[in-house]
Image (tube, rainbow, N blue to C red; front, top):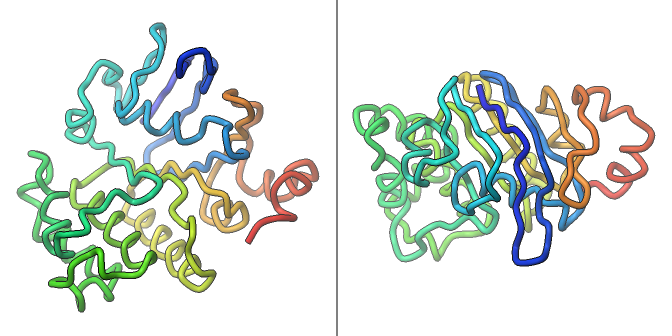
Length: 237
């Protein structure tokens, strides 16, 4: 489904990504693990065309080359990004934020069904659909951000640190929701510091270090890998 080959990215002299290659199969959940500064967020933003990588790489999605598309055309192709920090429109209501998510041509005919799914997935949002988002908690704003992305009717949903700053109970609720999204056949590519929770819903994982992919394995193997446990799981929430 998604194939990224030899992607490099520099911020001035700083190397953020160095010949990174990853893949996500249809309906698969893949997690990218790594310390802060490993390049994980830069990878998601490069795929979404929010940033512009160095020349010489390729990104294919459903057999179509997309590395030269504009960011809005990547959404039209079926990829949605929930960025770190959420990026919601705080001075708009929940319903208005969701409506903006359905702006893509591919999503408009399905807007009513998509909204119904979002409100089924996050009942709190349905109850507060007329509430301004800047008056909501961090967990509720993250629900809005995910819901808005789902409104674009993606085939691949990319999430950058979705549990960042959230209380443990909210984190559990969030990951249960991601499991339900997966059940609908939507592929997930997740960057997440909560290693245990992310591996619990994933099929595979990549290890990132200093802008490189240094390992790849099934999620269950990573969960039981002694090196991964020493590096991540002992400090997981």
